[in-house]
Image (cartoon, rainbow over all chains, first blue to last red; front, top):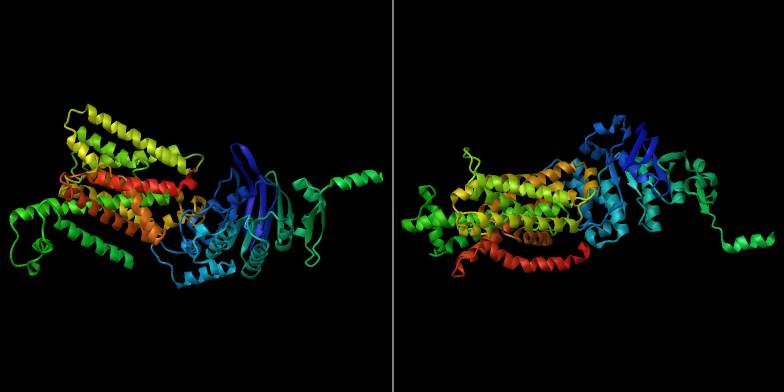
Length: 271
Length: 337
């Protein structure tokens, strides 16, 4: 079952094309990683799929339904989006912000019930925020705010989760914990996830599929072991890298090869 | 809900207390007897109150006390909505020049004696509303840069617009042949001409404005996360913004049409109430409205009784609010510059 189908998408900012002729599909329950250099159009692609930006050409189908025929309200019950969180100036507690994720499921004057409280508690637990739930969002760190945004998206109970660099400000423990959670939710609950990820090694370990984007085009797409190799990393990032296997999981691992002056010198000497 | 009930009771108590003060002071017992005389006979007390006292009480004091409450609530609510809408605790109808826009509209209607044949659409509040709405839209579009509204630009655009519009009001007054003393007293925020006619003229604006805010309370909460994030929560942000700007124009017009420009109530009250109860607009809106009503009722009672010369309540509120605004500026300086 195909959840997201994008066909021949095009988008531009100030006449400068950022997405050129992009087509892809994401199946129900897939966890797809989107990677590529800065300015390659990853965030724009997320905005196109989340109805934050209208494509100039092409269209997005969600469950075979054109995105522009789905109202924002309906979409919010099916899709949650986490973007880079700015700072919050208003003194909501962590729990209150996560509770805002229930808005799409509540009628205008309907108060939050015990069921909503349960869902929020579960989201807080999944993102390791239970102990922080009473703290003010103005007083927590950037990484903690990022987790609050993820918890809010989970409280939305979506079928599709779009994530723009969800692990950017997180320490290793929380990166691994959240990526494990995402993989589990996609496998066990059929949650469809499209995530912009910068760390190729983590992406390769956790994602079922990687899409590599450069200059607004998806150049490679497929399972990590089929996509990540020396030639691809050079093509996408312009970086020389050795690619081997993870000793435990067998997922591809990318090691950038830095040319050190002393090594060059030694090579010269040998010659 | 308990807090809303408590503040409602407090407002009612303040109204009763304010009714006892005045040029001829009444006892609380007399106030009750006067109110009772309007009720069915079963509630009436024995001795009737003299006719002169009745006139002072019902035709002058009661509408004034109620109007002070309505004006205070309107300003506090307009401030609450603007601060939520712009995610900025410095916003208020006065700072953003919306009050000045409403004042210009009202002055034009007063001086040029614009009147409509339709009695249900009296000119002064309607012109004040038009002025407020125009000023709101102008300031908003001036401050908007590439889809964002930076704090500093918004405040500067609002202050510039406010000064400009106030200058236009002064020009009209200078060149008008009318006696401007009354207009000036009104413009400084005086409630002395309060009567039932004034009250009934602005009540519809107040009710409509409050209704829209209560309707939008939860969406205002989501908006605090930012425009894009609230879109992803299913909110039509552009429509919400239009609705809120319309409501703040209604509320500002209701306040300004009665009492001219009263600064700072719209800034201080939402800020203090938010400090106490947090930023949830479902609580903030009723509590800020009631607090604004209480504050202005107290200040107006003070303005009309304590000093030998009656001082416009707008002057009193600025005397108290100015220093508070400077305190806020200092506290938030790091965020603005």
